[in-house]
Length: 204
Image (cartoon, rainbow, N blue to C red; front, side, top):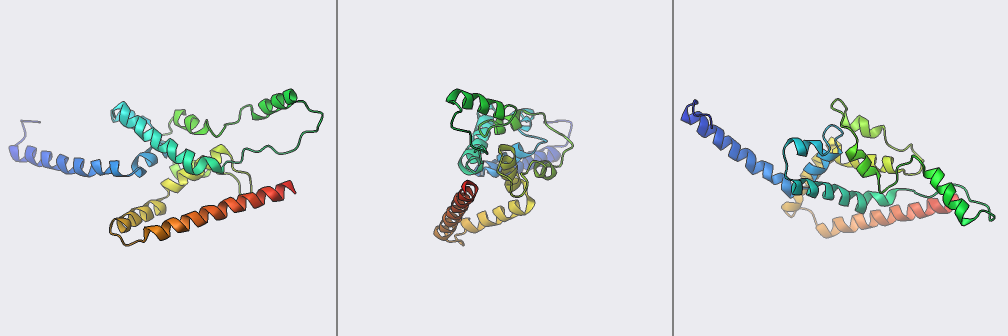
């Protein structure tokens, strides 16, 4: 729009912008772009505000992230309490005990909102940030540790490259979708069985 520039420069700029818009619009075809942006502690939803996204676009992005959390990761959290109470403890005592025990802890339903509402950190390395929140090996899965696992699943460079390659293979019909679905169903079944076995060991 700068008419002080030669017409050929303005025409080239318009063409370049058209090409950028063409490929930028492709990000709507995948949830990866929006999820990675929000799971990066430097950006979260602040980037959408700065880029002046419409509120509907922003809400859609948050809902995509929340749906992924609720459907695939939230179920991994171990919210059981260690230790059994004696039989002479009343329901009222138990309720008060649980409230005190949970005071200051982040619950599964709150951790995503707590993260998104926390201040952004312009100087943080996203992988280091989330690794610092991971649960220790062998420890029970906490809300923050599980959220960190989700973030690393999406922000890890090898994972991103693999997903991009897989997507192109799927589009070309090079991967038998039924076999892939069967594999992940079996994997999920094995994980659930493993958690059941761990629970039995603890009870024993």
